[in-house]
Picture 1 (tube, rainbow, N blue to C red):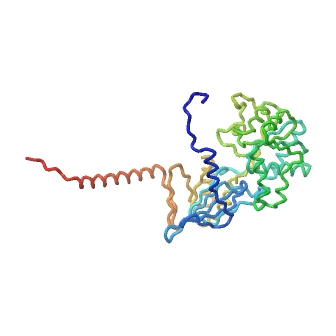
Picture 2: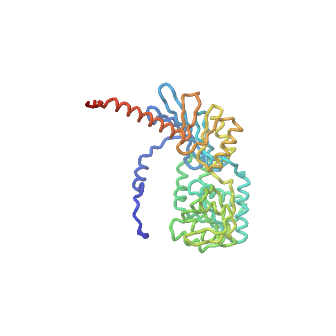
Picture 3: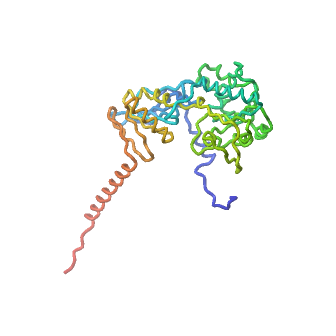
Length: 388
Protein backbone atom coordinates (compact mmCIF):
# COMPACT_ATOMS: atom_id res chain seq x y z
CA UNK A 1 0.00 0.00 0.00
CA UNK A 2 2.88 2.39 0.74
CA UNK A 3 4.24 1.78 -2.77
CA UNK A 4 0.80 2.25 -4.30
CA UNK A 5 1.01 -1.29 -5.67
CA UNK A 6 -1.93 -3.58 -6.26
CA UNK A 7 -2.75 -5.66 -3.18
CA UNK A 8 -1.99 -9.35 -3.37
CA UNK A 9 -4.39 -11.78 -1.77
CA UNK A 10 -2.43 -14.14 0.53
CA UNK A 11 -2.51 -17.87 -0.18
CA UNK A 12 -3.71 -18.46 3.37
CA UNK A 13 -4.39 -16.51 6.54
CA UNK A 14 -3.76 -17.00 10.24
CA UNK A 15 -7.34 -18.23 10.51
CA UNK A 16 -6.62 -20.87 7.85
CA UNK A 17 -3.57 -22.02 9.79
CA UNK A 18 -5.55 -22.27 13.03
CA UNK A 19 -8.20 -24.28 11.21
CA UNK A 20 -5.56 -26.66 9.90
CA UNK A 21 -4.16 -27.12 13.41
CA UNK A 22 -7.59 -28.21 14.61
CA UNK A 23 -7.40 -31.14 12.18
CA UNK A 24 -4.15 -32.54 13.58
CA UNK A 25 -4.50 -35.98 15.14
CA UNK A 26 -1.63 -37.07 17.42
CA UNK A 27 -0.27 -40.62 17.25
CA UNK A 28 2.35 -42.29 19.45
CA UNK A 29 5.71 -43.46 18.17
CA UNK A 30 6.16 -47.07 17.02
CA UNK A 31 2.47 -47.77 16.52
CA UNK A 32 1.30 -48.81 13.05
CA UNK A 33 -1.86 -46.91 12.13
CA UNK A 34 -4.26 -47.31 9.21
CA UNK A 35 -4.75 -44.02 7.37
CA UNK A 36 -6.96 -45.48 4.64
CA UNK A 37 -7.89 -49.01 3.59
CA UNK A 38 -4.70 -49.18 1.52
CA UNK A 39 -2.21 -47.08 3.49
CA UNK A 40 -0.66 -47.68 6.94
CA UNK A 41 1.92 -45.45 8.62
CA UNK A 42 4.21 -45.66 11.63
CA UNK A 43 6.24 -42.88 13.26
CA UNK A 44 9.82 -43.56 14.37
CA UNK A 45 11.82 -41.22 16.60
CA UNK A 46 14.07 -39.09 14.40
CA UNK A 47 15.88 -37.15 17.13
CA UNK A 48 16.60 -33.72 15.64
CA UNK A 49 13.97 -31.71 17.57
CA UNK A 50 11.24 -32.38 20.10
CA UNK A 51 8.66 -34.75 18.58
CA UNK A 52 10.42 -35.15 15.22
CA UNK A 53 9.62 -38.38 13.39
CA UNK A 54 10.64 -40.42 10.40
CA UNK A 55 7.73 -42.03 8.62
CA UNK A 56 7.23 -45.61 7.47
CA UNK A 57 4.46 -45.96 4.87
CA UNK A 58 2.92 -49.24 3.71
CA UNK A 59 0.94 -48.99 0.47
CA UNK A 60 -1.23 -51.98 -0.42
CA UNK A 61 -2.26 -52.76 -3.98
CA UNK A 62 -4.28 -55.96 -4.19
CA UNK A 63 -2.11 -58.79 -2.92
CA UNK A 64 1.05 -56.69 -3.02
CA UNK A 65 2.49 -54.20 -0.52
CA UNK A 66 5.20 -51.62 -1.04
CA UNK A 67 6.99 -49.86 1.78
CA UNK A 68 8.30 -46.31 1.64
CA UNK A 69 10.39 -44.62 4.32
CA UNK A 70 10.63 -40.83 4.57
CA UNK A 71 13.57 -39.92 6.76
CA UNK A 72 12.58 -36.36 7.58
CA UNK A 73 15.43 -34.57 9.35
CA UNK A 74 17.56 -37.23 11.04
CA UNK A 75 19.03 -36.23 14.40
CA UNK A 76 22.26 -37.20 16.13
CA UNK A 77 23.20 -39.82 18.67
CA UNK A 78 25.26 -37.21 20.55
CA UNK A 79 22.28 -35.02 21.49
CA UNK A 80 22.49 -34.54 25.29
CA UNK A 81 18.72 -34.24 25.69
CA UNK A 82 16.73 -36.15 23.08
CA UNK A 83 16.52 -39.89 22.61
CA UNK A 84 18.51 -41.32 19.71
CA UNK A 85 17.02 -41.62 16.22
CA UNK A 86 15.42 -45.00 15.46
CA UNK A 87 16.49 -46.38 12.06
CA UNK A 88 13.96 -48.27 9.93
CA UNK A 89 14.74 -51.91 9.19
CA UNK A 90 13.54 -52.32 5.61
CA UNK A 91 12.00 -50.47 2.68
CA UNK A 92 11.43 -50.63 -1.04
CA UNK A 93 12.25 -46.94 -1.39
CA UNK A 94 13.94 -44.64 1.12
CA UNK A 95 13.77 -40.86 0.75
CA UNK A 96 16.88 -39.76 2.64
CA UNK A 97 17.71 -36.19 3.67
CA UNK A 98 21.17 -34.80 2.86
CA UNK A 99 21.49 -31.51 4.74
CA UNK A 100 25.00 -32.54 5.83
CA UNK A 101 25.42 -35.29 3.24
CA UNK A 102 28.94 -34.21 2.33
CA UNK A 103 30.65 -33.95 5.69
CA UNK A 104 30.74 -34.94 9.34
CA UNK A 105 30.52 -32.65 12.34
CA UNK A 106 33.15 -31.78 14.87
CA UNK A 107 32.96 -34.19 17.81
CA UNK A 108 30.64 -33.25 20.67
CA UNK A 109 33.42 -32.94 23.28
CA UNK A 110 35.57 -30.79 20.99
CA UNK A 111 32.58 -28.58 20.18
CA UNK A 112 31.74 -28.03 23.84
CA UNK A 113 35.37 -27.19 24.63
CA UNK A 114 35.52 -24.70 21.75
CA UNK A 115 32.26 -23.14 22.92
CA UNK A 116 33.58 -22.91 26.50
CA UNK A 117 36.76 -21.25 25.25
CA UNK A 118 34.75 -18.55 23.46
CA UNK A 119 32.69 -17.91 26.61
CA UNK A 120 35.84 -17.66 28.75
CA UNK A 121 37.59 -15.31 26.31
CA UNK A 122 34.55 -13.04 26.14
CA UNK A 123 34.24 -13.00 29.93
CA UNK A 124 37.89 -12.02 30.36
CA UNK A 125 37.39 -9.07 28.00
CA UNK A 126 34.00 -8.15 29.43
CA UNK A 127 32.46 -8.58 25.98
CA UNK A 128 29.13 -9.80 24.68
CA UNK A 129 28.53 -13.20 23.10
CA UNK A 130 25.70 -13.23 20.56
CA UNK A 131 24.34 -16.65 19.60
CA UNK A 132 21.79 -16.92 16.77
CA UNK A 133 19.74 -20.02 17.48
CA UNK A 134 16.82 -21.96 16.11
CA UNK A 135 13.91 -21.67 18.53
CA UNK A 136 13.14 -25.39 18.58
CA UNK A 137 15.87 -27.73 19.77
CA UNK A 138 19.05 -25.71 19.42
CA UNK A 139 18.12 -23.01 21.92
CA UNK A 140 17.30 -25.61 24.56
CA UNK A 141 20.52 -27.55 23.95
CA UNK A 142 22.56 -24.37 24.30
CA UNK A 143 20.84 -23.46 27.57
CA UNK A 144 21.62 -26.96 28.84
CA UNK A 145 25.25 -26.72 27.69
CA UNK A 146 25.83 -23.31 29.29
CA UNK A 147 24.28 -24.55 32.54
CA UNK A 148 26.47 -27.68 32.51
CA UNK A 149 29.60 -25.62 31.88
CA UNK A 150 28.67 -23.37 34.82
CA UNK A 151 28.02 -26.33 37.11
CA UNK A 152 31.40 -27.83 36.26
CA UNK A 153 33.16 -24.46 36.72
CA UNK A 154 34.45 -24.48 33.14
CA UNK A 155 33.05 -21.00 32.47
CA UNK A 156 32.29 -18.05 34.74
CA UNK A 157 28.67 -17.35 35.58
CA UNK A 158 27.34 -14.42 33.55
CA UNK A 159 23.87 -13.11 32.67
CA UNK A 160 22.29 -15.14 29.87
CA UNK A 161 19.54 -13.26 28.04
CA UNK A 162 17.08 -15.66 26.44
CA UNK A 163 15.40 -13.40 23.89
CA UNK A 164 13.00 -15.32 21.67
CA UNK A 165 9.27 -15.57 22.47
CA UNK A 166 8.92 -18.73 20.38
CA UNK A 167 11.96 -20.40 21.95
CA UNK A 168 10.66 -19.51 25.42
CA UNK A 169 7.29 -21.13 24.65
CA UNK A 170 9.00 -24.23 23.24
CA UNK A 171 11.17 -24.54 26.34
CA UNK A 172 8.03 -24.50 28.45
CA UNK A 173 6.81 -27.53 26.47
CA UNK A 174 9.80 -29.68 27.44
CA UNK A 175 8.64 -30.71 30.94
CA UNK A 176 5.34 -31.90 29.43
CA UNK A 177 7.06 -34.56 27.29
CA UNK A 178 9.62 -36.38 29.45
CA UNK A 179 9.27 -39.53 27.32
CA UNK A 180 11.23 -37.73 24.57
CA UNK A 181 14.39 -37.32 26.65
CA UNK A 182 17.37 -39.32 27.75
CA UNK A 183 17.74 -39.23 31.52
CA UNK A 184 14.34 -37.59 31.96
CA UNK A 185 13.20 -35.77 33.97
CA UNK A 186 16.65 -34.73 35.25
CA UNK A 187 17.77 -33.41 31.86
CA UNK A 188 14.61 -31.33 31.49
CA UNK A 189 15.27 -29.67 34.84
CA UNK A 190 18.82 -28.73 33.81
CA UNK A 191 17.99 -26.04 31.25
CA UNK A 192 18.55 -23.03 33.49
CA UNK A 193 21.90 -21.20 33.67
CA UNK A 194 22.31 -19.54 37.05
CA UNK A 195 21.69 -15.99 35.79
CA UNK A 196 19.10 -16.73 33.12
CA UNK A 197 17.06 -13.69 32.07
CA UNK A 198 13.83 -14.36 30.15
CA UNK A 199 12.94 -11.57 27.69
CA UNK A 200 9.32 -11.80 26.58
CA UNK A 201 8.48 -8.22 25.63
CA UNK A 202 10.03 -5.90 23.02
CA UNK A 203 11.03 -3.49 25.79
CA UNK A 204 12.94 -6.25 27.60
CA UNK A 205 14.68 -7.12 24.34
CA UNK A 206 15.67 -3.52 23.59
CA UNK A 207 17.06 -3.08 27.11
CA UNK A 208 19.78 -5.66 26.29
CA UNK A 209 21.35 -3.09 23.93
CA UNK A 210 22.60 -1.23 27.01
CA UNK A 211 24.23 -4.30 28.57
CA UNK A 212 27.86 -5.31 28.29
CA UNK A 213 29.57 -8.58 29.25
CA UNK A 214 26.50 -10.76 28.68
CA UNK A 215 25.45 -13.78 26.64
CA UNK A 216 22.55 -13.22 24.22
CA UNK A 217 20.67 -16.23 22.89
CA UNK A 218 18.09 -15.27 20.28
CA UNK A 219 16.31 -16.36 17.09
CA UNK A 220 16.23 -16.76 14.17
CA UNK A 221 19.00 -19.25 13.64
CA UNK A 222 20.01 -18.03 10.15
CA UNK A 223 20.06 -14.35 11.21
CA UNK A 224 17.48 -13.23 8.65
CA UNK A 225 14.55 -12.44 10.96
CA UNK A 226 13.52 -12.13 14.58
CA UNK A 227 15.15 -10.30 17.45
CA UNK A 228 18.64 -11.61 16.66
CA UNK A 229 18.80 -9.09 13.80
CA UNK A 230 18.72 -6.19 16.28
CA UNK A 231 21.42 -7.77 18.46
CA UNK A 232 23.66 -8.28 15.44
CA UNK A 233 23.14 -4.67 14.43
CA UNK A 234 24.38 -3.56 17.87
CA UNK A 235 27.31 -5.97 18.13
CA UNK A 236 28.72 -6.91 14.71
CA UNK A 237 30.62 -3.63 14.29
CA UNK A 238 32.35 -3.93 17.69
CA UNK A 239 35.80 -5.63 17.47
CA UNK A 240 35.49 -7.16 20.94
CA UNK A 241 32.13 -8.87 20.41
CA UNK A 242 31.80 -12.57 19.70
CA UNK A 243 29.17 -14.10 17.39
CA UNK A 244 28.82 -17.87 17.65
CA UNK A 245 27.21 -19.66 14.69
CA UNK A 246 26.03 -23.09 15.82
CA UNK A 247 23.60 -24.23 13.12
CA UNK A 248 23.18 -24.81 9.42
CA UNK A 249 23.19 -21.62 7.35
CA UNK A 250 21.44 -21.87 4.00
CA UNK A 251 22.88 -20.19 0.93
CA UNK A 252 21.67 -16.61 0.58
CA UNK A 253 21.05 -16.02 4.29
CA UNK A 254 22.74 -13.40 6.44
CA UNK A 255 24.14 -16.17 8.63
CA UNK A 256 25.76 -17.81 5.61
CA UNK A 257 27.34 -14.49 4.66
CA UNK A 258 28.89 -14.21 8.13
CA UNK A 259 30.21 -17.78 7.97
CA UNK A 260 31.69 -17.08 4.53
CA UNK A 261 33.61 -14.07 5.85
CA UNK A 262 31.52 -11.09 4.72
CA UNK A 263 33.10 -7.76 5.68
CA UNK A 264 29.75 -5.95 5.67
CA UNK A 265 26.11 -7.01 5.94
CA UNK A 266 22.96 -4.98 5.38
CA UNK A 267 20.56 -4.76 8.33
CA UNK A 268 17.38 -2.66 8.20
CA UNK A 269 18.72 -0.83 5.15
CA UNK A 270 22.03 0.07 6.82
CA UNK A 271 25.50 -1.27 5.96
CA UNK A 272 27.01 -2.78 9.12
CA UNK A 273 30.74 -3.50 9.29
CA UNK A 274 31.63 -7.00 10.52
CA UNK A 275 34.42 -6.49 13.07
CA UNK A 276 33.20 -8.95 15.71
CA UNK A 277 34.88 -12.34 16.00
CA UNK A 278 32.77 -14.90 14.12
CA UNK A 279 32.99 -18.45 15.45
CA UNK A 280 31.47 -21.41 13.59
CA UNK A 281 30.97 -24.49 15.78
CA UNK A 282 29.45 -27.32 13.77
CA UNK A 283 29.22 -29.88 16.54
CA UNK A 284 25.98 -28.40 17.88
CA UNK A 285 24.10 -29.19 14.69
CA UNK A 286 20.88 -31.14 15.19
CA UNK A 287 21.29 -32.79 11.77
CA UNK A 288 23.09 -36.08 11.31
CA UNK A 289 26.39 -35.81 9.48
CA UNK A 290 27.37 -37.99 6.54
CA UNK A 291 28.59 -40.98 8.56
CA UNK A 292 25.54 -40.82 10.82
CA UNK A 293 23.22 -40.79 7.78
CA UNK A 294 25.01 -43.82 6.34
CA UNK A 295 24.66 -45.69 9.62
CA UNK A 296 20.99 -44.74 9.95
CA UNK A 297 20.21 -45.97 6.42
CA UNK A 298 22.30 -49.16 6.61
CA UNK A 299 19.46 -51.51 7.61
CA UNK A 300 17.22 -50.42 4.74
CA UNK A 301 20.13 -50.77 2.32
CA UNK A 302 20.71 -54.32 3.57
CA UNK A 303 17.06 -55.09 2.88
CA UNK A 304 17.51 -54.11 -0.77
CA UNK A 305 15.97 -50.64 -0.64
CA UNK A 306 16.56 -48.12 -3.39
CA UNK A 307 17.44 -44.66 -2.11
CA UNK A 308 16.41 -41.22 -3.31
CA UNK A 309 18.67 -38.53 -1.83
CA UNK A 310 16.62 -35.38 -1.17
CA UNK A 311 16.46 -32.23 0.99
CA UNK A 312 19.95 -30.83 0.63
CA UNK A 313 22.05 -28.46 -1.43
CA UNK A 314 23.12 -30.13 -4.68
CA UNK A 315 26.75 -30.55 -3.59
CA UNK A 316 25.71 -32.23 -0.32
CA UNK A 317 23.24 -34.55 -2.07
CA UNK A 318 25.79 -35.54 -4.69
CA UNK A 319 28.44 -36.25 -2.07
CA UNK A 320 26.08 -38.46 -0.05
CA UNK A 321 25.01 -40.35 -3.18
CA UNK A 322 28.65 -40.99 -4.10
CA UNK A 323 29.46 -42.30 -0.62
CA UNK A 324 26.35 -44.51 -0.54
CA UNK A 325 27.15 -46.04 -3.93
CA UNK A 326 30.81 -46.61 -3.03
CA UNK A 327 30.28 -47.94 0.48
CA UNK A 328 27.01 -49.86 0.23
CA UNK A 329 26.64 -50.59 -3.53
CA UNK A 330 23.03 -49.37 -3.22
CA UNK A 331 21.05 -48.02 -6.14
CA UNK A 332 20.83 -44.31 -5.40
CA UNK A 333 18.90 -41.63 -7.29
CA UNK A 334 19.17 -37.85 -7.23
CA UNK A 335 15.60 -36.91 -8.15
CA UNK A 336 14.74 -33.50 -9.53
CA UNK A 337 11.47 -31.63 -9.58
CA UNK A 338 9.01 -33.43 -11.81
CA UNK A 339 10.74 -36.83 -11.73
CA UNK A 340 8.54 -39.88 -11.19
CA UNK A 341 9.35 -42.88 -9.01
CA UNK A 342 7.97 -46.19 -10.24
CA UNK A 343 7.57 -48.58 -7.30
CA UNK A 344 6.72 -52.10 -8.32
CA UNK A 345 5.83 -55.13 -6.23
CA UNK A 346 8.09 -56.20 -3.34
CA UNK A 347 11.39 -57.53 -4.60
CA UNK A 348 11.20 -55.80 -7.98
CA UNK A 349 13.42 -52.77 -8.54
CA UNK A 350 12.32 -49.19 -8.06
CA UNK A 351 13.07 -46.94 -11.02
CA UNK A 352 12.99 -43.21 -11.62
CA UNK A 353 11.75 -41.49 -14.75
CA UNK A 354 13.34 -38.09 -15.31
CA UNK A 355 10.98 -35.17 -15.70
CA UNK A 356 11.75 -34.77 -19.41
CA UNK A 357 11.15 -38.47 -20.00
CA UNK A 358 7.93 -38.36 -17.99
CA UNK A 359 6.74 -35.30 -19.90
CA UNK A 360 7.65 -36.99 -23.18
CA UNK A 361 5.64 -40.06 -22.25
CA UNK A 362 2.69 -37.93 -21.21
CA UNK A 363 2.90 -35.97 -24.46
CA UNK A 364 3.14 -39.20 -26.41
CA UNK A 365 0.10 -40.59 -24.59
CA UNK A 366 -1.85 -37.37 -25.20
CA UNK A 367 -0.85 -37.38 -28.87
CA UNK A 368 -1.84 -41.01 -29.27
CA UNK A 369 -5.11 -40.35 -27.49
CA UNK A 370 -5.78 -37.31 -29.67
CA UNK A 371 -5.10 -39.33 -32.80
CA UNK A 372 -7.43 -42.09 -31.68
CA UNK A 373 -10.12 -39.54 -30.89
CA UNK A 374 -9.64 -37.86 -34.24
CA UNK A 375 -9.96 -41.15 -36.11
CA UNK A 376 -13.05 -42.04 -34.11
CA UNK A 377 -14.58 -38.64 -34.84
CA UNK A 378 -13.86 -38.97 -38.56
CA UNK A 379 -15.47 -42.38 -38.60
CA UNK A 380 -18.53 -41.06 -36.76
CA UNK A 381 -19.15 -38.12 -39.17
CA UNK A 382 -21.18 -39.14 -42.29
CA UNK A 383 -19.41 -38.46 -45.56
CA UNK A 384 -21.22 -36.12 -47.99
CA UNK A 385 -21.50 -37.45 -51.54
CA UNK A 386 -20.86 -34.86 -54.19
CA UNK A 387 -23.50 -34.35 -56.85
CA UNK A 388 -22.63 -34.93 -60.45
